[in-house]
Each structure stands twice: as structure tokens, then as C-alpha cells.
Length: 190
Image (cartoon, rainbow, N blue to C red):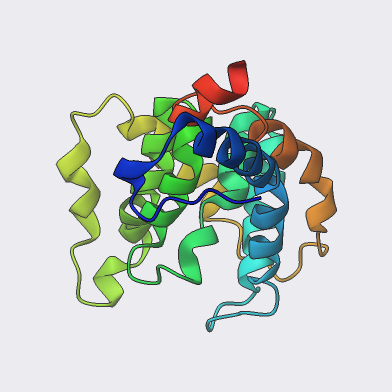
């Protein structure tokens, strides 16, 4: 059975009793969709020495090896997930996916990581490598610069053993099982 309204403003409590279980079931499958989307990065080199999936896995692996917490590691894994659909704003796409599930500090770090990574190459493509300086007053500046220097920047290594996405699947499922910052938090808390 499906709801029958044609305008949301005409919906009824009975309609929402039909819709909400479906929405919550769909929501519960988010980790599967995220993992499937990460697999789209496999084999896409974009001119780099490793494909986009291995870059993401290397970044997450480095964060895990350094003892970062689960949420941070998942952020490291997903930092470039937006490359496929948001090539011009991949960091915004990744940040939007993560925002309901992570701390404000981790969200900010992922949202701005592309500008911070630009310090390493913008001057080669005619852009201002110091573009990140506009954020010097942010409490998250040093955190994001550290993310780039320790995890993102060195993770283009073709000599590193190939990593498998399954290593991080439990963490993805854990982080995406419970929203911290969205309307679904209210719904999943009940």
C-alpha cells in the first residue's frame, strides 16, 4: 500500500504511517549505498599513480595506523567520495554525506580539505596555493592541515600493498548507523 496524496500539503497522519517505515528501511541501507558508491572509484585513476579507491583506502589506513578514532577514519575514507558526481565540488559532496553523522570538526575538515590540499599543487595549475589562508582564523585550520599532511597528501603511493574496502566496512556501518545531526536522529532515537 502507498500513500495517496498528490501534494505533500494534503498528506495525512495515515499516509505517514505508510511512508515512515519505508523511509526508515531505506535509511538503514545507507551504508550499503555508500560502500557501493566507493566501489565506483575503483579503476578510476584520473591520471594519478593509484586509482581513487586506493587513494581513499590509503588515506583511511594511514589514519587508522595513527590511532585516529572510527569517525575520523570513516571521514578519511569518504573524503573523495564526491569525485564521481561532484567533480567541481567533491569536498562539498563528501561533507554533505557525512554531516548528519559526524562532529562539526570532522565535517569542517572534509568540507575544506580540497582547498587545503591545494597548497601542494595549486601553484602548478595557475591557482593560489595559499587559498587555505582565508581560513587561518578557524579553530579547524590546524586540524585540516594535519589531515592533509599526515593522511591525504602521502596516499598516492603505488608501492603500497593494495587495500580492500572490506577492511573498513564495519566502521562505515557503525558511523552511518546513527545520525548525530539531522531530522532522522529524532526518528531513529525512538
